[in-house]
Length: 392
Image (cartoon, rainbow, N blue to C red):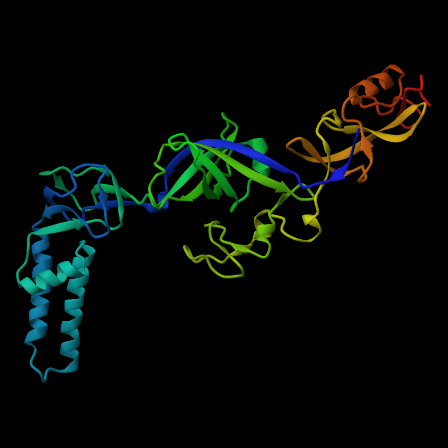
């Protein structure tokens, strides 16, 4: 016998998956001109580079005309006489700016453009530079190969942030929310625990595996988490009185729906994408009010379940002759670990049978009295007297 009680119950959701690249931090370095790769400064995948580092040197006759236009525009502007009218000077300055922009679009940065102007001569080679810091994960460029404009040469991944892709069963999806904290470990680093934030829950369930992908964004400043590492994760979920996910820490907080790792104390915009923040409650959390009261729960072994109904046997009296029980149909909420949340049908403090409820129900069925399988088995309310030798 255990009384129905309000208590803080939580569910531990265990998931498995692997580390993956953060796709928002991948960059493809492409050739912006037609030409020939004369030299590779990075000739193998796995090399760490910084933003602006040189990767390759490309020979391209097309560059000559673009640089000659720059030099011609610069000389024309410098050659204007002092009394030149404003319109003429403005046109010359606009031509020079357009020439600079053309080279920028071809992949020249500011120092490359200034180098051409300082040298006063056009070059037929251009340096391909990295657009971000990271690790070269794929090299498509080969020395001596001819390339077209737009052809990919390198792929670079910034591993300072990674994704963890987890598989969640359908039964676990009710407890998962954007912005939840996830703890996990990897087999390569035993004994260490890492933390990330749920940033996406796949809206489609795999029809074969019956699972949905859950994406967790994880900071990885030291680079110890490497793509394809196996992960075992744990999500601790606390349940509110109505059986929803409770998070007091998000009370009054505002979250970015596109980047849930961005949490602020009030309305505003996302630091990453600029989208308006939304209240935590709109993402399925319960954070305040009566919902924060602990739910009324009973042990999972107490109810007898038929698929449509849930019946418990409640103690309604006890004396020297024995104990009297009443079969009562109740409405259950979700199961949380070893407990069921009770929506209605029981009051706090009422004692329910935890072990032996099926035996009591079987005796009632033999007596053709109301029971779990036969709620209309007799004219009286379902009751059973244990230890008195018969029904009351």
